[in-house]
Length: 89
Image (cartoon, rainbow, N blue to C red; front, top):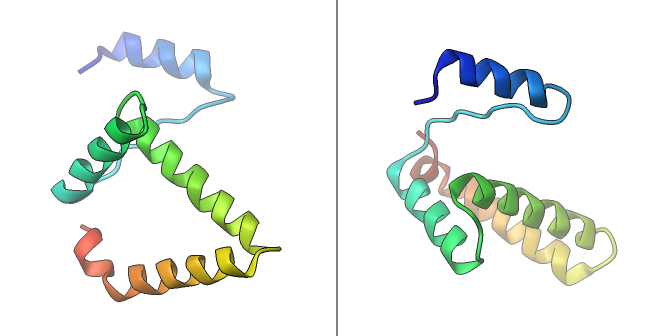
């Protein structure tokens, strides 16, 4: 755990470009994030979260002009909502 002084220094340095995200997630989500990081050459779970958001945004953007991408996005969205309790704390 970083000291309060180190945390404040980080916050001051990055206050206009970053914010810290602390979330509670089921253990399987942490395992999935580690797997995503490893399989895509990322630097850890935080970067795996960023990559996952990047993929979601890319799929949404592709869906605007690609019917197959929109179909896949809708399938993933529906499946997540159906199984939401497995993934949320």
